[in-house]
Image (cartoon, rainbow, N blue to C red; front, side):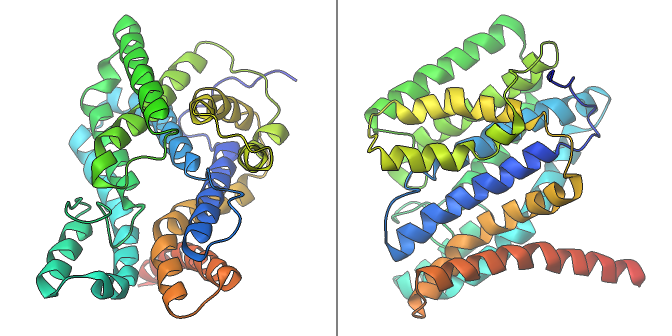
Length: 328
């Protein structure tokens, strides 16, 4: 079976939708363990974030760069991108406000932290830059990568792009060695390292999209690519792998191969679409739901079920709203 030619920008990519869902579940299992305790089978689930950033860069280069070249205004795209993400992040903030009130040092501390996080702005002086909803830092960094892409990176080509990618790869290797992995970004003291981490994954995604537009992607079967992430993460725990370069190898080798294999999947379009839509709401809402349910006495499995239910609601409620508006 030969590798498919790159699809047109409007073509759905069901394999990538399914991989988005798989990565979201890996991050969810990491956070459930972080909140409720238990075995760290998916203790490296944070690598799902690197995959998300790589996928974002890949899709931006594959889908949006041609539209920008055809005349789409960068400002209009960035505004649309912000407003697409902001409502779900606001819903997560609302869910997390009671817990933030309990953690706050008075009304002023609660108010300014909530206001900053509502605008997707980080705060300093706290354990996390986004205390209300810890994973929100990745959304801010993804938006920053998107802005850099439409304003500058789409014009960086050839040797200049290769030099940028090599520079970021060196930074990624350094922080991986220094921090014994790439689990950096959510805390103020690792915020800059997190930016390097996100930029590297994102720019690598851009490079893969451009490369595979002129050359065939590696012929990894889709049925091997889709379960690869949970298999590798759980396998590293089972084998006790603790080497510093594991995360680096995962981002530089495993993630591109998973992308290549997923591009070969041509079926399951409707199912993949629904699961892909589930990925962002469950990622955005999971931590406030998990922390709140733990505070109310929920256990591991009930907290997990509530987080999944929140992700489902995050798909169905906006869908129902749009249909209701369409009937008016």
